Length: 447
Image (cartoon, rainbow, N blue to C red):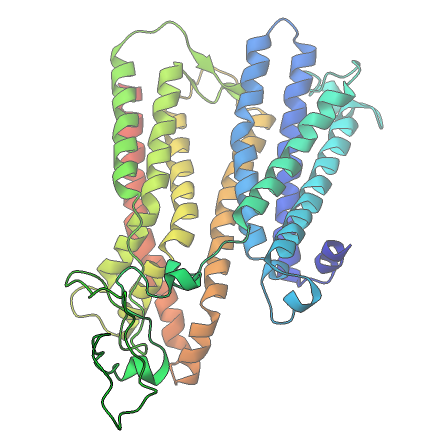
């Protein structure tokens, strides 16, 4: 009930994002039901029916990815002062986010079921003069358990993914989790306040006696405290120093290796003759299974390398004597590399895969069917919406920093200029990179 009230009283922008999740769940549910209808109307082609069902995994993954991104930006899942006092801690907020996602995706599955039944003619007469009867199994009884199982996939997977992503984590460092870690790994006591800022007094050995007249409140050194080693990290004596930027994501080597493996698989497959081919629904792509695996590996490698490339773009913006504008834009890109880089890499992977698939399109085949068009629209729309949602999340995470800059007198035009500079830097890096990877992926397939 609390999740329903929070859903009802949200702002229009939040409702719009939830509506996108509902529409994506409706489209994915319709594709799943269509694969079931094709299997019912073509009992002599189980492999084609299984391929159609496997083809629905890509829209399903895109829908779940969008649902997770929307739940991360939902104000109802943000910890606020006073919520823990009434029992709304991190675990309860996670449950609310998962329940809200389940409500949105369940509504989309119900819409998909109503549309599917309407097109079958179960609710009204057969529309479109029965032109879509090949994948609707009209005139045949629809198995209820199989239909409900397929429709429950999107709500179950999406709510589980949201619960896993938003589960409570202990973000405290290891030196502050208990009294046994009070001295950290370096053996030095943590210092706070003026004692740590202006430097602690030199400690005396434990066996040394305290002279008469000396302040007894001086904290003695522990007896078992070892001397800090020369190469051991010690606490920063100046807590006013700004934090260093986060380290670069470690996915660049794995991404490059995966892209190289995908290109190698495609090049090897194009030079060897194989009789077995795979034909996706709608005549969109025809090729050997190994070629499809190579295309998938290439797209996966591009998605893995995107966070590290985003961090690199931020570092390049700050090179060569940067001013305030480039420095601000670069630091934001470095901080938000993981949050923005992943969905941006998925968008680039989808674009490169679409380019490679068009290279394998057979003009002799029929035109792209409605289900293929729906699937492409779902994947493209979900990935772009996820990227925009991640941008909103990044903006929310640095709202305090933006407010502090405005209080210090920074003009709003500079903040907008920094945002435009970040977008231009990402476009200048990922645009040519996507085109190059797409050309390399399609080159072995067209020769």
